[in-house]
Length: 279
Image 1 (cartoon, rainbow, N blue to C red):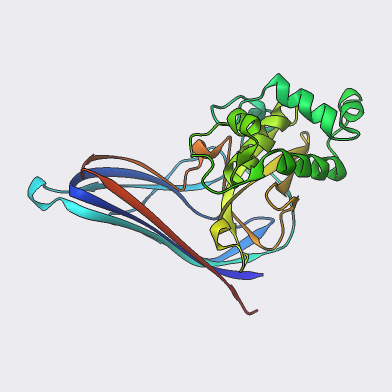
Image 2: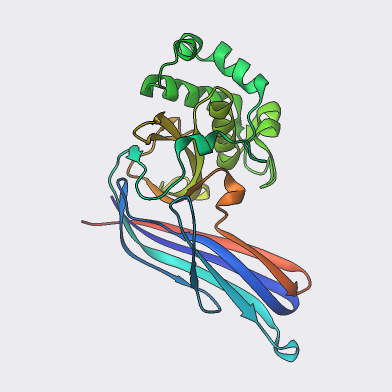
């Protein structure tokens, strides 16, 4: 599927903004699951590529204004066309961390014994598979995906970007970010490397999921092979998904993250439009 994306992030300020530095995870990378035909990111200041150790394309910029000329608005626009291949399995290439790196605990996706016990008790066949030391099968991963979706019901506005996996697990509510964090934390809790993926999702009847999150779970550590799973939709990723960044959790691959001086009260608005294109 060929998908056109336009993603606009707008910050407005009640007082003049004097200084801002922003880090962006807004540039998808061509790979086994997709081909980026065209992409551009427009920002209020010169964009600079930034090193990244997890295979993402990261940029940053700094905006400096004189005190008497402080700005009242920042607009960041990412747009382009991506052809998705409808696959869910990928292998790491280049200098990316080994799968064991994604077993580490992070603030938003921390492993917990209660999660491991829940998974063993809930997913048929999981406990014996773990005891036998078997690699996760597609069937087991899909069953775990469905179990997490049942456990953490999707409810918009029920959590914040700072909600942890354990909180969402206990509250049994969340959005795609929370469902992904819980899946990552559960996998780490039972010894399966897992990482958080941010990106775009096309569905004409679900515009609120245009900015989406899902999970990669390692299925072969030696070959560095992963399977991508969408907890919200209880499925393997397919031609509707565009990958933008993958990392240990949401905080490590925020679309836009920055610091500022001045500006007073800040208001943020985000608009994402995804449209299918012909061949």
